[in-house]
Length: 271
Ligand code: NI
Image: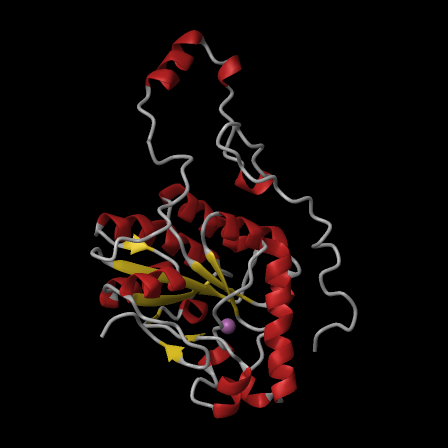
């Protein structure tokens, strides 16, 4: 059940980050802050070395917003967060300019709205995984709409954008006419189930991805576990090295020219 009162209390009080302007250096939000380089206290030789280092032209720039349709792409997805582990995953995505999709649950979002904001600011997509991880086939149509709308409202308050996608908990209800009629969003399943929640094992998670990854894959993980975050630290640079673009679900389907329609379910973006 959603709380009867305002579930967003505390969230709406967050001071909005000013929109970055091209002509000035915006004050980074704490969550986006990179480790400060204390150049002032360094010896001249050290500062010279820092200045001489070839800057990475991509650092500080937003990730490529439009994937190249002619190159392979993968959508990493993370369910059941946000949690404190999400930040470790976002650090990796930020470092490599990669995008992912986070299917959040409302009860976690209420604890960590700033993490969801950071993910959104990094170009990641925030999807809806219901308010408290309900099996949609076991609740009434009214409850279904409450579960979905409650999270949409929370995500909108945290990020300024409403989710466009739903991942039903347990993948349940994708062929249920009542669910499809009442959850009026594209239902996003997955191509590769890493079973990270079950194994809690980094190598096993990595192997699941390596074994089956291909252009158009949707990979299911959970941003709740350190072994998953460790797997992300390895697989993100590895996939990029292999030529994959790491994109959100919506970016991938748009790039593939596949329309995402309400009440339909999707496991992959390839034939
Ligand atoms: Ni889940």
